Amino acid sequence: MTMNDITFPPVLAGEDSPVWNGGAFVRSGKSTRVLAYEVGESGWSDELTELHESATESGAHFIDVASRGHAINELKRTLGARPASIMEVGCSAGHLLADMRRSLPNVTLTGGDYTLGTLVKLGEKMPGIPLVRFNLADSPLPSDTYDAMVLLNVLEHIENDVAATAHIARMLKPGGVAVIEVPAGPELFDDYDRQLQHFRRYTLRGICNVVKQAGLVVERRNYLGALIYPAFYLAKKLSQARPKSAAEREEHVANAIGATSRFNAIGHAVISLEEVMARVVTFPRGIRCVVTARKPS
Image 1 (tube, rainbow, N blue to C red):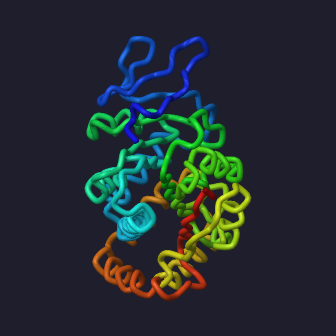
Image 2: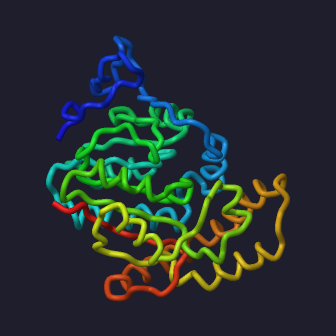
């Protein structure tokens, strides 16, 4: 499938359907890099994206590298080398899109996000990939469109995660795959989560139930960051014991991410060991839940 095979709905009533020309969308005779649908109000913002990006050293934090690596491995396993269409929902600064473009040369990529400013910046540095601003919980995008959809740390930001996941199932082709990651541990919800506008953290069983309610079949499930969970648990409990004011939370998030970034070398080594173990072990705990699910054919 090429982007020319996907029919995007008009942004406003009475308009023709926008067309991707390889570098931009043509909408009502005018060129626009980002196809922006109405999304309504949200607590998430371009500023929060920038906070997370600056604190994680532009995606180089070991747990974010591990998340992207896991997603790509699952895409390779489920799609093989065949041509396929993939949408990343919550593409943010585009780190996973860049990794997929390098690692999956036969796929057609689309990036989606909620914040327009983030997508405009991404469009300037990543030509050739269509970018769409939309609200996943009320998605206007067409059904039966993508061979795979990837959501890394997205559903926790959406109040109605069941409705959002149902749209994922709707937009996937029959037999299509969803690779989903969410933060783990409801009992560890703290000021970090509040600042990043999380509605919840998940158990592995909980996110699998959400996925199943959407009509998807769980193929694989596990925790990511299992071997560093004890240190993570302690840090979260200390944070809960020392609640921050709203004004202090932004600095708290930056400091929390920055502190763990100093251990990137050790973190990469631990995660490499964990990846080997995860081939034969389902971990009882971790800092993120990872689920691969398929839409019935």
